[in-house]
Image 1 (cartoon, one colour):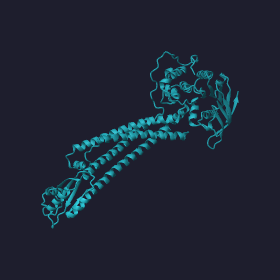
Image 2: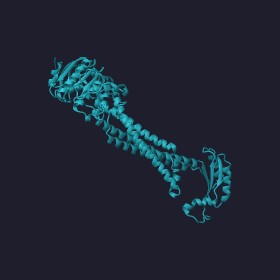
Image 3: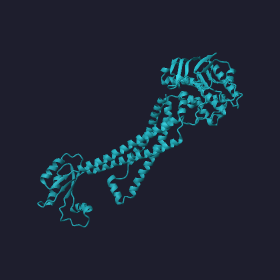
Image 4: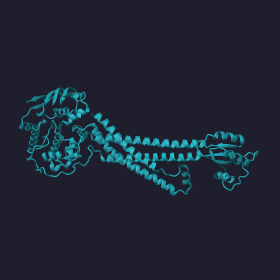
Length: 219
Length: 325
């Protein structure tokens, strides 16, 4: 599904922040992406999302080399991925419902065709009563769940979650982890970027460890 | 992916009713996906309204000039004058009678009317004042010819015959006046059209800057839209919809103000019609009235401004997104 070969990234003329990255994400897999703060986890996620271009190496997504993608394919690939940002990145002027429905709305679907589905998902993540609220009045945990719901609504083949438990208490962190495991069992490949060792110990899964710009797989 | 019922959210803060609950008809509030700062939005509406107002007034003025010049030309081109200069060696009354006779013999002349002495003296009153005895002065006499059609090809021959038969008479076909009036009217129309074009360009630039500002302010939202799978086309459409709405509001306000201003001017000019100034204006512009076609032009200008707002915002967004990509 995702394959990185000798990928390197530098900003401008600066030093390489990611060096010789080699890894792959198989369909229906579950893995952690870990490493100390500032190791480049978010940067690596942005590379998978095609928000950044590698300065060298090969990035292959869904069987295609991303350096030769046209705009339509890029959009299609992004629709197959769900992403939970560390800072949620909910649109402040939209309600929780509108934020979660966003991936469906941008495909041009009629609202009536997805309303029930969005409401069901919101209830599923425990935001049924908060669907009319705007992000500004939500707690950290609620924003987190809204961001997760938005990543899931389009039934992605790959879920990338950047520090999804970074802003919540340990209890909610455990519940969210269970939710991700559930998703994997439903057929989604899940990558969770975290530096929370306690969380990783709750469920054993391969770890992609980033340190000093290098990545190694700790199975 | 069907949502499993068994997802264990029982530790979550709230318990929510599942199924059986009726959904509200619409949960979306038709909020634009890309927020355009309301203060900047309002300012843009005001700018577009002012520009539309000016453009619509210019278009109205150009139209007024076009209609007035058409009236002048119609009136002037249907008329000709024969001027008979006094000559001590000739009898002027006989010359006039001969010239009228010759004129009546020309097929394209519908009517030839010698202007009575009293009437031609009256024409000099504004310059020489009333109450003067002009009998002693060698004042030319006029014969007014009304033409049956504006295309008259027998007038050149008539002019030559007239010069031969009545040496003291000359035919004045008003061509010089028509040319001068046409030039003046064309200048007014051209200036009006130029102002409309300039204002449209200014409106386009204002929208382009506002769009760039909105894009810069919504950079985060635009990035999120990209990540959730929005195409550039979709994002451009969102901005375009927003700016067309702003353009329509501004255009409608400006166009309405222009229509009110023109109607008010028309009302004032008719209310003051008894004054000499109003008579002068009336002579120059005809009735101060642009008619339905004029109002249609004003509405068209407002619609074009809105269309330009949409088009420019779309192009600006596409350009910005390409640069972002």
